[in-house]
Image (cartoon, rainbow, N blue to C red):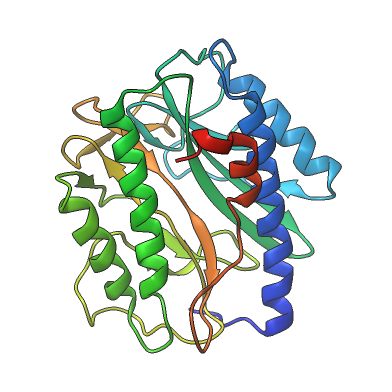
Length: 265
């Protein structure tokens, strides 16, 4: 069932989502060669809790095994999503997607950003650039009266136009009191198909795009998803609210990009 949010509920969602952006900015300060993904997780967990929120990912149930053990997802290089933080040491030239969720005042926040570690090959930076562009193209399409399929179509056209793969198995989603609500928001689709976008609908749009083909496999931990051909993948995500006009972006990359400066994607 799709739940439309009131203006007051959207403001509570905004607070949770801005905290996600601030948390990702704290992580941005720490992303460098020699740091472990577990250290990044500790930074996020402490920052979220210090600001009166709960990390929604920690303990998230898994239909394939044990609950998620950490507060953020850290997906390095060929990992697409749901990478589990631990002893992985970041190296110069790596990329790392960090997905973060918070729960505060009864509502969830959810956003993701893919960071460069040191100097990254231009081919990989271009993948990140196009994936981020696709996110904003999807957001521009998300207006009252359009359909979910219009968002996916716009993202798919942009990314496949650059010969990248669009992951099918994992998609965006509605968000509110629960982190994952209806409707699903695929990054592919047909114009004019799917649920109608209505004022008050809040969704997370999150292109997951691969340098090679689109096929993915689950790793042995039951969480981490990587590309089958082991080529790099990128992931950017915003939570938005549908309004009478342009979509209202409730999360923010501003905090992150203030930290990154001219190294931002």
